[in-house]
Image (cartoon, rainbow, N blue to C red):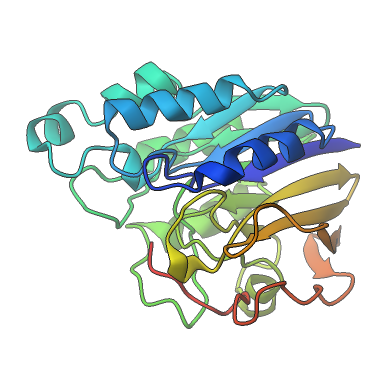
Length: 282
């Protein structure tokens, strides 16, 4: 069995400072083999925010891999945004924008979905997609990690990244089985599986781990346990009005004949209204 912690959208600089220690305690107590962070480690890509993100990552016991989010490139510093958009991210987080980690039978491949020329809309570059599909391991459970989801629920009014539809079809054909993303600050897994045209991909869209925006209603992260063709998911949720995380709630999915299926209905989210079909602007 392989255990991976998936967290996203930390937004240091606009984060719940009181939740940092409880989050670290949960992560370090999860028995994880790897921690995957799918972008937006900072709120405005400022030096002090990157220092907070770096300090946080340094306190995580398991190995960490991360990809950048749209908030990790400067919004207002146009020269840097245009000429060296990832300089702060590379110094504080990782020099690699598309990292790759093999953890037992699971291969996690990062994909950069940030478009520095756009405020929030992402972009999947064809060259990056070629490199990613070339790196897929035919004998592994291949997990793609990026910031922007490649498919949205109907209630979402944001644009998909450029080339998202083509990218989703291509990575499915190439042999990826799981996609981890964030960006929308709303958990979506079971609902995505019900409406997707790509049932061979389990799309796990994470909520926000630390953002302090009240409209998000809750913070959360997930622990994924890979057990052959079965993935057990623990969602750790911290309502905005509470000081820490509640006991985890559980979901389970299995892959049979190249198709993912939910084994049971997901448990009811803790905060009323914070459902998979809710939408929060990120």
